[in-house]
Every structure is written in C-alpha cells, then in structure tokens.
Image 1 (spheres, rainbow, N blue to C red):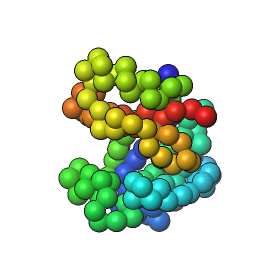
Image 2 (cartoon, rainbow, N blue to C red; image 1 turned 90 degrees about the horizontal axis):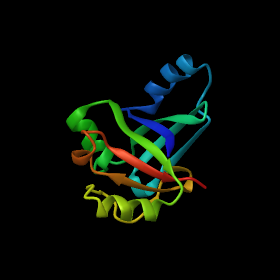
Image 3 (cartoon, rainbow, N blue to C red; image 1 turned 90 degrees about the vertical axis):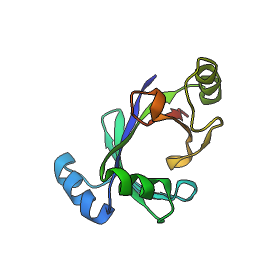
Image 4 (tube, one colour; image 1 turned 135 degrees about the horizontal axis):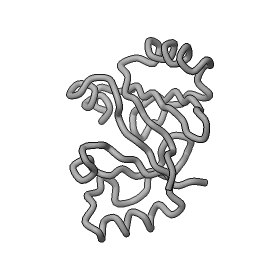
Length: 131
C-alpha cells in the first residue's frame, strides 16, 4: 500500500487553483468532472503522489454537504491497493466500517471505494486500485 493522493475540498477551483499553482510552481496536470460523485477535480502531480482539489458540481453532492458542515480543507487521504475488491472483503471481515462495499468509478476512471471515518480515527480514507 502507498499514498495515492490527498484531496482537499474547496468552495471554488477558480479561487483555490491559483494558490496551489503558486505553491507548486505549475498549473494542474489535469482537470475533470466525476459525474458519479458530483465533483470537479483539479489534479497536481507531486512526486509519486498527487494533490487533488475538489469542487462540488451540485448542491446535493456529498462534497457540498461536507463543505457546509466542515468548510474547506482536508477531505480525504487515498491509499493505492493492488486488489480493491479483495481488500474491501478483508477489511469488512475484520470489522472495518465501509462506505462502499463494492468498487466504483472515481477520477481518472480508477476503481475506488471509501472507508467510513468512524473506524479510521475520523479520517475519510479512499482506496484506489492501481492500474
């Protein structure tokens, strides 16, 4: 397992991207909309990992709800795994609370699943299956 990315919830990519462009010395490596999760993502490659800025595309998206409760800031930490379905089965059988029992499509068409923060020291964890 390794760090895949860190995601930061922002109210506006137009406002947040310039700050991170200045910090990292470059524009986002890519931007996309993930319809299933109702988010717009700006991705900055940082070494072997990436930093993702997330903006809600709909008022009823999970990210919009998170922003209204917690404001901008760290949204989740993503870890790369080789076998996502197998990892989910193993974690669930060990008593880890899952948000997603089955992989779903995330940014970059990668298969992802989320673990509930109640069982991970209050941090939302995303598992990403490496291609």
